[in-house]
Length: 58
Image (cartoon, rainbow, N blue to C red; front, side, top):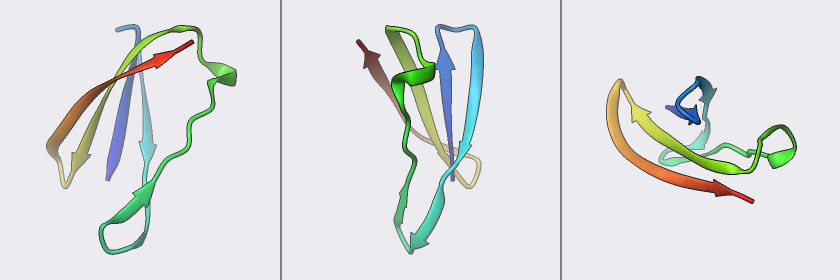
């Protein structure tokens, strides 16, 4: 699984999500290296777009 985060439409960071059990996975983000802004992320599983969401960093 991959999580793509679009940083203000400028850069895309890719995170591999490690799966510990079938159907379980996580990624931890810290706002230490993120500016206050609205970010958009998309979750892809096996190359298929599953969901896109908005993330607000304050």
